[in-house]
Image (cartoon, rainbow, N blue to C red; front, side):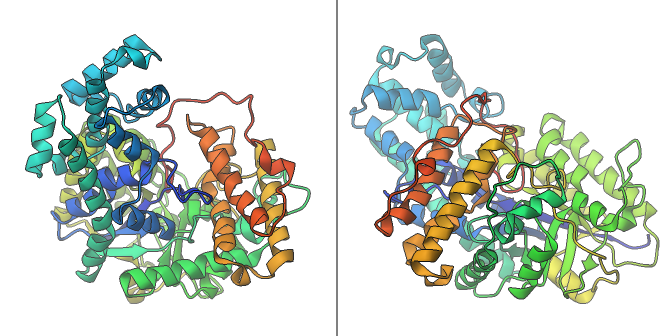
Length: 553
């Protein structure tokens, strides 16, 4: 093609809703920690490249949690952190610290700090014997865990944080408090900086259904059979199309309150779409949505072939926006480029990684015809978890990537809503395949025995609430919220045999706690299915830090 290839970059920011519905306490720390390592930093780094435009999703339930932290909310790890400086830890709390406070990439983070590495080596020798360590050990561990979850560049830019890094040990109460305070500041600052960059024209903020549900499965869980005929599905399907619409409408209203404008684009949670979900998106007044190249391939009934360098042979099929019969627009991510950022480039030299990415885009650009567009290459992935797999939190890679895209006259980064207004799609998609960003199916979230139990428990609770109060919009606020939280994709992700973490039991308990609230509020007794763990006890847990994807904790 002649001219520049438009490139859309979408960084998806998401964590599950960790607030316990019965205690209002956060049960896991990952929102706070990603705020200090990724959410604010990703926007700050972008400011170094004013010629580069990107998109950030801001899941409404994530923004709610960031605001809670900014107002002083705690999680178990902040409470334990502060108790270390008071020398009041009991043995269980010390064991918790030894299990949790090394939960970050050992090679790319812990090994970069001599004192943090020393603490880890001591813990490995001692095993599960916290009584062997002094109170000072746990103070140092608390500070290093929280400092390790900060971007190295942000540490360099803060004299006090840099001094703590260089000090290494013997930390005081005031120093620990300072680190936690900086994390709260970063949590409060991320949404505001995104908003400012959007007003300046460099960022487009997209929305996501409020509590990150799989929209097609809320509309009809039986939709899973369209892409996976062997799926084990619940005997009584989950069919509450109203819930999908409310998850979208509440997200739009929340976005408008936070950023002053209605969102125009949406990343459907997990890139999961179906004809019915596409109609719900359009009915909510959204202009466009994004999904995966596998969904596109199944929608148009052809394979997207690549050459030996993994560049697209027929890029004109993927590198374009499509129009749907209902009037919505759709774009589809380049899976190879997106997944190599998420899973492969972290182990490469940053220069080699960027050259590989740019080479794939360049070869596809050369194969695009001069006429017949508009053309648009889409790179879409998790904007938080990927960077733990990179040295220096991905900064070297991102600076090279943004610098190359800013300087290379073969490409231009665009904001999709602006681009589609000026360049409306000319090709209509004949239909929308029912699938997600993984395998163009929903099998990670439905189809197995544990899934079946979870969907059965959710359907029973949702039907009970319908009998008690009627439509979702008419339910008491805490009941409605608990149901919408329980509809989130993350709980079902962790019920899959493909995924496991040391926190499996926490995710299971949190899912069931949200269901229990609904029954208790009505004075009912939760059924036995909800009162006992749903996860498969035969499943073998793998170490944390595995799959990283659009919207995964």
